[in-house]
Image (cartoon, rainbow, N blue to C red; front, top):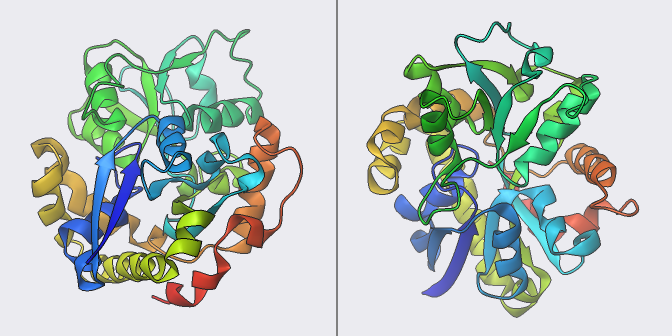
Length: 310
């Protein structure tokens, strides 16, 4: 049995869920891999651990690789965990805002984790919002870096305590806020809210280093197969997500994860599409994370793409 250490900046999430589910449902072990997914956030810290060899792979937004691998040098995306920009904008229910109304954030405090916050700021700029002029305060929430914390879960709690007016987080945190009656989804870019380009600012993927691939390509291939098989299993029976939740999630998140996974099934596609990489890289260039365009095969471990058939 080969060992594999996988870090993720947010464990209690639907976005990177296939990587965790592959462990808890036994798909890694079925491929001869003893893999463990551990929480290590925020995104830059997880990627630094990958660069330093403290972990073997990271389940995170694909563009986050650029935090520690300039121009993607030394790292590859090997399988998509879910397609599209995974974060949603949630505001308190008492704030007057219609679906898709980004102007409603003016004067508000919006919780956003380091990494995802760049996508939110891009979205606001595209909507003609100047965060200084319009007094939009974005940033981390209290206790977000505490060991074992999940940003989406903490954001919902912070919203309930009125420590923030809204948050930008994964669908699981958003669903908790909605079900408690404290928040409403204002923007879900994957489902058409906001500019068309916002749908594919990034995507959730599993990244590893070229060193790991060179050292043991069979281990990486087995890991990819395990994730693809997990996505296939979830498509056949979304209620499997509840079993994963019972083992690794707090009770309130466990209660909603299967319904969120079922709703997200169209996004659980393991393929890494060229147009998605192109769109992500334009976003990365706008942030200054990329200094010049890069080719698809500089970003993606194309030797594994035949394994993506689901």
